[in-house]
Image (spheres, one colour):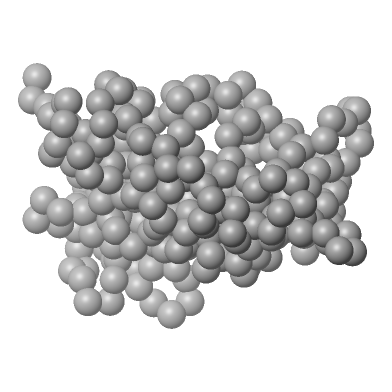
Length: 262
């Protein structure tokens, strides 16, 4: 599928029912048409052009659905340095929604480029539906344990805050991965939250999430006790003057994907 955002009269826009029908691709500047029916997630699709080459292709409906929940087009598909975040949160962290496999070195490289100021959301819907991913809440405990058979290798490689979507309305905020031998299921524990909680408090909240202490409930620890961490730009270490922008470089001040004239 195609991008979640497009450029129209110099602004980044979503494919909404009230918006324009045609706009430009932020990646290659070629024209795109808004796809905003009742069956698939609203998105933009390139008009036919056999010579066009664009890096903004190939996203799943799951990917686009989460991006659209950020609401603000200026925080979706944001390029910072040599990386492009699926979503930039109001507190300046990148969110990567990951469906396809990545190598552990790729995971480490992305986390390093973002200076660990990022979150992973892994797509576990298929694994949960096929009962390869199981979650269980031990009696009297606040946390949930999980076991993931035949998991993708990259999943346990993440070192930054990580979420697994197990059902359309349910995610697991991973507290810890347990060490494992080759061929064994991936095990660990975490805290259960709804998709609406993730949208409100993680994607559009004011503080980066931090796992609660073992045995504590998620809500008071995550939404109230999370320390406020001042965010500085991964490229220039200057403080952000507003979400996604800092005052040190022109392409920050002028918005996402700004290219200074050479």
